[in-house]
Length: 423
Ligand SMILES: [Mn+2]
Image (tube, helix red, strand yellow):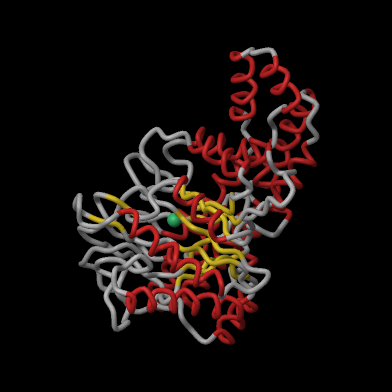
């Protein structure tokens, strides 16, 4: 999709510098007993899915300020996702959201073919009213009214049906259900209703599909949420069966929660299914991956790399964040690269040395072993992996030089701003 000659032109000016930086890093890593080519291969093989909705400007409950060239349709969104992958070569798949991305599956497949993209997990939406007879104001899969629950179940089954035609293999379920006042709901019976609905959806999963339950501590419900924490999510996955797993969204926890330990526990339980990457200072998925706590992102990857040989571990990685003041394409490119960076850095950890320090209770050296990997500037590896795959050494620079945003701003109809709402 993205003009190859413009990527090439942007690369040409910095290719010599990259070669020198790559060689220097290779020498440094060799002294530590690490083969840079092995690490580069890992960087090349890395992939994280982009959320279709992330290509639009996000908003808060106060307002939304769209930028120029906002994608109006799923086909525009796929064009933008293709730009992200063409330049970073790290985001070959897109996660769709139904009904926002609803279109003829044949047309979606044709667009995927044209853009070189594939489809990742499907995402259902029962946290807003999108035209059904029954309102989700007081809940969806856990609603007190059976007809409302049935509508929410049918919607999830439809998401599976659409996804099956697109080559997707998983459904992620996040609900906004909960309560705003103590006493508003019976928390136990509400959870039982949720489980009952999830069991109905589970029955509709094709043999080779998985279902992910995503927990969130608060919002839109401000007193309690039905799937508040990883414990509830694990209970759900265990009760549903072997095709059910937990999805961890980095922004969906209380401040200071040790997310890397949650990751470790879910791996132990055989129930970790995937991630939604983002970052936050105060709550939820408000900020781009790696902008606030890059070390925590590294520590999460440290657990994942440590466990990568675990039998049956099959993780779906996706970005899920809101971009309110940046060009969404730029934010998604930077985020994909930051997630890839943390993965590559975690791949540098000397695990034999770490295990030795842990056995000796040498806390200082154990911690230093992790930080040594985290402090390594792996940018030349990431840039080289992109270059070799036909991407840009510096994706932001190449993107800006090509003027893509100005082109789509001239071509696409202007989108109204105003009201609040998530993307
Ligand atoms: Mn999420």
